[in-house]
Amino acid sequence: MAGRIHPTAIIDESAVISEDVEIGAWAIIEADVQVGRGCVIGPWSRIEGPAILGERNRLVSHCSIGSPPQDLKFQGEKTELRIGDDNVFREFVTVNRGTAGGGGSTTIGSSNFFMAYAHVAHDCHVGSHCIFGNAATLAGHVEVADHANIGAFAAVHQFCRVGAHAFIGGFTVVTQDVLPYVKTVGGREAKTYGVNTIGLQRRGLSKETISAIDSAYRLLIRSKLSVEAALERIENELPDVPEVRYFAAFVRGAKRGLIR
Image 1 (cartoon, rainbow, N blue to C red):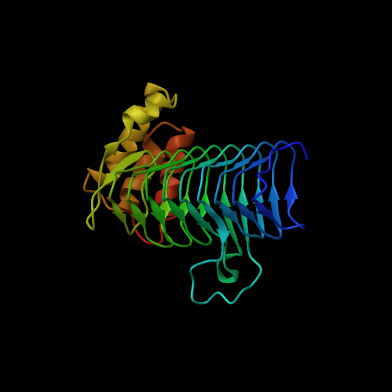
Image 2: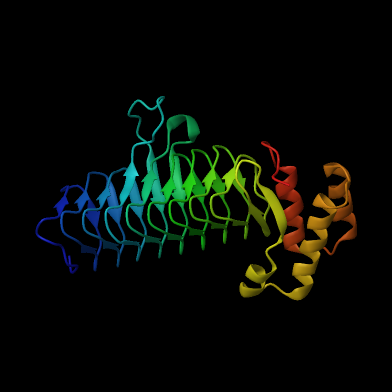
C-alpha cells in the first residue's frame, strides 16, 4: 500500500484500501468498505460498510459516509452505498446506506460537489456533476439527475425527483418534482422562474436547444393548457431534440406532481 495513512487512523482489517489512498488522523474505516485509488479520507471522517468508493474521492474532514439509514423500519438488514469517482465531500457531510424496502442501495455518481453539512438520505440516487450547497438535504428515496444544482439549506421531500440541469434556490422547500433545466425557488410555496439559460449556456447547450427547452417550458407553465394538452403540443410541434424529449418524459413520469 503506497498511500499515506496517519498512525491514529483506525482501519478494519477486512477493508480494501487501494493504492495511493491518503487517510488522515483519527479517521475510521470499518468492515466491508472498499476505497478506490487516489482517494483522500480526511481527519475524523468515518466510512461504514457495506460501501464502495470509486477513485479520487475526497472527504475533507468529519464526514459520515455509509452510516445506517435514519428509518425506524430499518432492522440492520445488509444494504449498501455506492459512490463513483472524483466527488468532493466537504466538512460534516453525511450519506446513509439504503434500506431493504427501498431497493437496498444509495448511489452517488461522479464529479459531484457536496458543500459542508449536506445530507443524502437512504435510497437516494444522485447522478453526476451535481452541486449541493451548504446543508442542502435530501430525504429518503430522492432521485437527482445529472448537473442539478441544489442551493444552500434547500430541503427535498422523500420520493421527489430533481430533473437534469435543474437549479433549486437556497432555502427552497421541495415537496413535488423539480422540472429539468428550470429555476425553482421558494419556501413552502416554491415556484418556477423560467429556464436556467445562463447555466445551460455555461454547460455548452446550443442556442437552438435552449430555445426549444424554453418553448417547452412556456407551453407547460405559461400557456394555461392542461398538462396533457401541453405535452401533446411539446411532443408534436417542437424540434425533436433529446432535451425536449427528456423534458416531456420527465413530466409524464411525475407521481408527486410538479412544482410549477
